[in-house]
Image 1 (cartoon, rainbow, N blue to C red):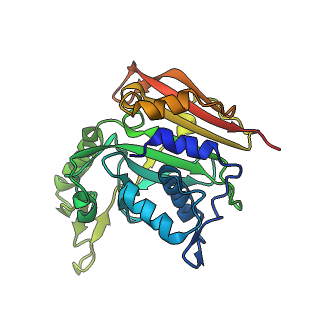
Image 2 (tube, one colour):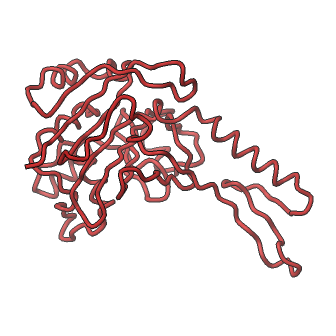
Image 3 (cartoon, rainbow, N blue to C red):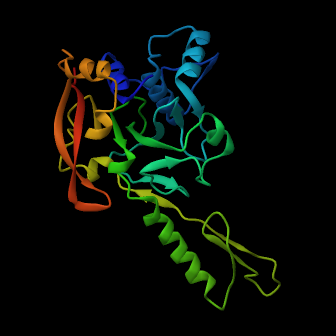
Amino acid sequence: MTNILEAILHIAELPILNVDQITFGNNRITSVGDGLEIFVKNAFSNNFNTTDESTKITKYAEVFSYEGSQTRPPDLMIKGGDAIEVKKTESILSELQLNSSHPKAKLFANSHLINNHCRTCEKWEEKDIIYAIGHVPKSSKILSSLWLVYGNIYAADDDVYTNLKATVAESLENTPEINFSETKELGRVNYVDPLKITNMRIRGMWLLQPPVKVFNYVYTYNTKLKFQLVAIVPNDKYNSFPIESRNKIEKSVNDKLSIQAVKIKNPNNPVHLMDCKLITIKTEND
């Protein structure tokens, strides 16, 4: 079974990091966002050097149990492994737009935010989630950086976000001037106008600070590098991976790759520090 350590090793071996040099059947990918998602997909399935489309599809089916839609998380799920949410930014400092899906420490099978295909693609109750955040500068198709961050060091527990949603909904419901009804989003205000023909749909639009800001106390982003990968893996997660994967990354002779111990603020209690591994790949400009 693949994992984040194997994906990092596959990326470390790449000489060029273009996200547009990807074909799907006879059609070239036109969206850089789609290209980034396939880049991540290839990293986890070791498909970078696979040229035969049939072989590539077979490897995807062996590795992944689910490939998501654009409107609901996650983008990918590894069979018996982690979920992956891919986000692309054109500016390294831009907030991540999560839209109606709040940040997640973990992914749960009973969440109303996932669809039934995701819920039933394999037998599971909860999965760790990796946020894969790629920076592709505007007017460029070159991957400048990629962050791989586990949700439980990036997002608070679910009830932090769902309690806020409930508070906002309750406030609207208790406002006598409006006719409010609950929905799977924040809610809906009915009969806004005198004719009672207009309703207002209320959605939460969640924005998340990028990891380059959130984790700047353990990693300083270097704008002079051609490419940098930054992965932050909690120690308990790291130690759960097969010894073969850990040995490969710890004994790698690739001079672009390094691994070190860091302490990360717990999203639920920032004064409690979590032991993590910081794994980086740094490629200098030619």
